[in-house]
Length: 513
Image (cartoon, rainbow, N blue to C red):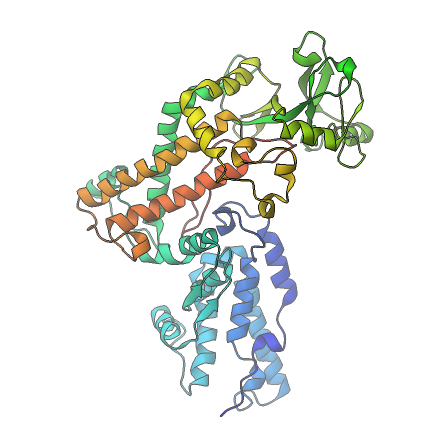
């Protein structure tokens, strides 16, 4: 039996280039697969790509007949390092020229090990066919966020992943399994089909057709949700009298002050009053004592420059700096953590609007809280449908599990996920959830009834027809709703709230949002 050949990773790889590309991924939001759905300890794609490559490519010292001297081996090793340097940047993710170069290097090592020669460098189809039939498959039994199977597939290898967590399984399917199943198909939505009927030609690559349908039906859901519950999300009025769309309502949890001199006022528990740290244009919330305002105080939003001392003060919010205690903004008395937890368990925590963030085109506009905005958010608790939805969220089968929240939620009386959202958030999440099934029916009708795709088995049964395609589209839309819930849930004692946004994902082609 021949001795195992030494792989490149056993000798040397360009760690600086790999580390730099991996670190840079943290700042890439648009189109990065990590934005599909949150996952713990997601592995950087650059590192996975480099490690897979260097595990499969032989070190030149394994082939003394081809690289007989140490100088020749080192020169070949440096050449392979250069391949990795071109391979790991984010821009190389969909650069077929660079990817095909890396695939050929893997194919060469595999072929030499079999006593063969690899396909021609410029024959991409032959290289992929060779890797699919003769290269070793990649197995990841704990695939989590799917980085390893995704990068194995990108390098032309057969990829298999598994996980015990159903969310991880779905992420893996969305990244690795679903896109190839519908690769090359044109979109089925009426708008795209109308353009094609007018003489257009579908030139999309990979799963761009699927991506276009996710955009279309996601936009339909957004428009339909706005029609149903848009009155609960009023626009913000700007100083010049114009209106702007609100992107965020910032809320503060409140608790009744234990100091008798506060006369039972509900005071805020805020981790930081800073809203923006842009140099020269810092924006913050300033609490102002005002006996005529509700509970004796109001919030003002200010922009400008700050002294270092003031900025440090604002960054503390209403935290006392002593453990996890807070202070009453009316009397400066300490509010102990045990007291806050007891009030939470008794169901006496509340929330108050602290600031509004509006869309100003290429900038954000920070506005002080507006009475009608608070009133509308609170009034939704009287809507019967909200009551039903909240009852579902508050039900015992949906507890805030300690393994996910670190035990923080239940300690403050927030026993179920329903306690973590205000009523308006709950009705928005349930409205979008209900619209998922409606969107699936629309996709199915457009794909099957119009005769574009034959019907067949559902996606989870291995189907590839209209039913499976409808399942695929709403899988990505469902991820968007889940991300919206994640954004809404900015946690117990701090600032919360984000409205629906499309998640940015990449489906083997152009990134979309």
